[in-house]
Every structure is written in C-alpha cells, then in structure tokens.
Amino acid sequence: MLRSALARIFSFPVMLASIVSFWVFAGAGFSIWDGDIWWHLRMAEYLFANSATPRVDIFSFTTNAHSWMNHEWLSEIPYLLAWRVGGLMGIYLTFVFLLIVIMLGIFYYAAKECGNVKAAFVVTCFSLFLTVVSFGPRTILFGYLFLLALLLILARFRSTGEAPLWVLPPFFCLWINTHGSWLLGMIMMGIFIASGLVGGSWGRIDAVRWTPSQLRRLVVATAASLAALFVNPFTYELVLYPFNLAFVQKLNIAYIDEWASVDFNDARGKVVFILLAGIILGSLFSRYRWKLHELLLASFALYAGLKHIRFLFLAAILLAPLLSKMLDEIIPPYRKEIDKPALNALVLAVLLAIVIYRFPSRADLQGEVDKRFPVKAVAYIQEHRLSGNFFHRYMWGGYIIFFSRDMKTFIDSRTDIFEYTGVLKDYLDVEQLKGSLAVFDKYTIRYALVPPDFPIAYLLKNNAGWKVIYQDDGAMIFERATLPPAAAPNPPAGSVH
Image (cartoon, rainbow, N blue to C red; front, side, top):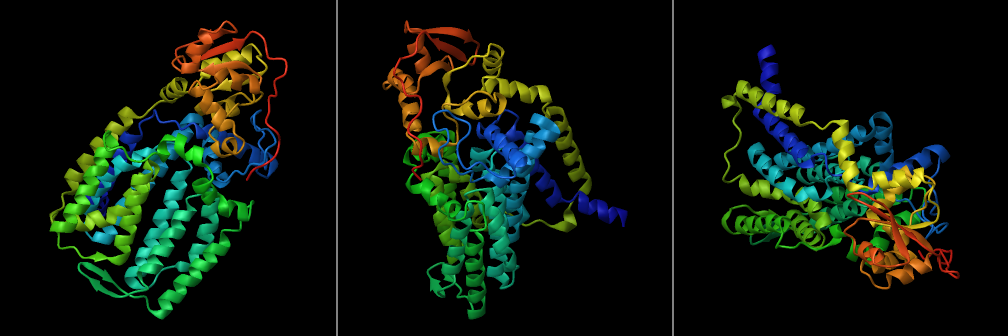
C-alpha cells in the first residue's frame, strides 16, 4: 500500500504539474510590483476601519470629493490580510500562489478536455509566455480564477448534460464584487448557449443542439446570474462599469500599455505569431473536428488578445484545450504502466532545491520596491514636512497614498476618475511637454517628484523658477520659487459618470 501511495505522489502527471508550478515561480521572479497594489491596500484598510468603501475620492487634491466607485473592493481584502501577516513577503506569496493555481487550472482544464496530460503540459508551458502580461499582485488574478471555474462547469455541462449550474448565481455575485472581468464570464455563458441553438455539421465543424431541458436550465442559470450581479454596494453602477471602461474611458485605453494591440515586432508578438501559426497548421493538417463552441471561443480569444495585450492571458485560458487536442494527435499519451516514480521524485527534489536556493528574501523584495518607487524621496518629503501641491509620476501615486498618509496625490492608477475630470489629459500634457508649466499653474503645483530621465525633469532643471532640492538614482524633487497669485488648484467639484 505504501508503494502504491508513493507511486501516486511521485507520478508523471504530478511531476508535470510541479514543473508548471516551478516555471510560474521562475517567471514571476521577485521584481514585479504593480503600482496599483498600494492604493488597493489603502482602500482595504479604509473598508476595515469604516465598514464601507468610500463613495468619493479622498486621496488626491485634483479630484478631491468627486464621486468615485471602488469596483474591485472584495479582491483587495486578501492582499491586505497578506500584508498584515507578512508584509512584502505576504504580498509576494499571495500573488505567486494565485498564479500557480491559475496555471495548474489551465493544465487541468486542457488535460480534462484532450485526455492527454503530456499535450496539456506542452500547451500550458507555452501559455506562460502569454500570461506574463498579468504577473504581479493584480486583482484581475481573482477574475481569471472565476473564469477557469466557470469554463470547467460549462465544459462539463456541454459534454455530459450535468453540472452544478446552481452555483453560478452566487458565483457571479462574488465575481462582480471582485473584478470587472465578470463580463467575460457572461460572454462565455452566451457563447455556450448560442453554440447549442443549432445542430449539424459544416465541413469540419460540428454542432450539437441543446435538449429543451438543458437549454432551459442554462437560461434559468444565466438569468439568475444576471440578477445576482446587482447584489453589490453600488447596484446598477457596478454592473455598468465594464461598459463605461470600454466606451467612455478612451484616454485610459489609449494611454495604459496593457490596452495596446499586439506588436508582432517584439518578443510577445512573436509568441502570439507562433500561436496563430500553430492554430492554422493544426486546422489544415490535423484530423481534428471543431465543435462550434470551440470555434466561437477561439475566435473571441484571438480577437480579444490581438486587440489588447491585457487579454493574452484570457486567450491562453481559452485556447489551451483546443491546442492540446490538436497536439494529442502527435504526442503519445501518458502510460501509467511505464511510469518511473523514482525518477519523478528526483526531478521534484531538484526543482524544490532550486526554489529554496532562489527564493527571495525580504531584503530582496524591499530592494525591488526601492528600485520601482520613490522610497527615499518620500521619506525626504516626510522628514522635511514639505507641504503644497505635488506633481508626480503616474505610477507613483499608489505608493504615495499608502506610505505618505498626509500627502495628497496629483494622480494615481485609479485612472477612471482622473479621465472623467480631465486630470489624466493634463498629466499627459505635462509628460509630453505640452504646456507643462501652464498645467502647473492651473493646479498650483509647488513641488514636482519625477524620475531624472523624465522630459519634465530636463525642463525644470533649465527653468530659473524651479530648483532641485533632492535627487537620488530614481527620483528628483523640484521646488518652485514662487506660486502664481491667481491659480485655481482644483477643477470644479462634481461627477461626470
């Protein structure tokens, strides 16, 4: 019995899952710190202290008291708890754990669909190159966990006609309070329902019609899930937020790098090209017959991933089962009878040793934070009690919110409210040297906290009205000699959404 238990523990599929986990650890490294994490921590602190989320901006001087909605409030809580228990190490362990669970979920999903664990492993390892766009302490990781769980439920229902659809309404209730990616889940529901409304074969595409009972159950589950979306602190406003992002926040979409389209000239674009070539070649030369829902899922995945690199993670999830099925024709399946538990155990031991050796210390993590954020500059501001309106780098706003409690930000990565009020446009004008000094006059800017290589730093260094009062390798603080007498620091109060 002991030998049988050890054989299961050190089986070939377990070894492959361990290799996937190892590659996630290696890919995550310890240098990826998303600027959003800091204001998320501060928001979760506010929630714990006040038993409610703020309904207006309380952190910036440019949009102070403007209406604002924290649409990711629930996903912030695990990160804050991790921070309180382990500080930076707690944050690091949380996001690496989430990434490992997601990638193992992709591995399981692909293996379940194709029945070939080796083909699923190859595709999962390739998928890592697509998912790195969201590596880091991101709230969207919870959204991808929900998405994987939903796809597993829908895939089971599609193949067997039986699945726990009753969990979907509470599932979506949690999802909408966690992240705006719940809309992707609704799109998946729509694709699965639509693919079963017709039956037949067209070339190498097959469609199986839902039975009346199956269709009724799906429609009821979808309707109940839609109703559950409104169980949130912001009711209909939270439901409408993803549409607001897509159709109203144009500058946000244009400015943030992860909303850009795939560039086939960079490394990521080349990986996407290989993915496209693999799908095309697989369609031409394999004997695989497409199911209609697979074709619809693949089409949506490719459109979303090519349109916005942010959704390459989504594409990896949706395409993994399909690519695994294509590889199943050329990769022989796993044979339990020829498994070598001793060799598998040796591989696991080597991987564990590498992880232990390469595991970051708290000093390593703090060192990376020091490189990415103005740690010493903020300490200087606090030590010298500098007061007045600051202009600063966009991605530093969250750090200021969390670590400099008395300092109001000019902007931070809660991009939506700053686009609504025009602050984002003004920030971009400064960054691009379009009337920068006029923007400083508009907001009565007394200090500028910027990287030494920012164009505005060069402008201020060569302007007699400004002087450098602090500088290190990553940040400079400029002080203005005199403020304009008739400046208006804040735009008019109100909400435009």
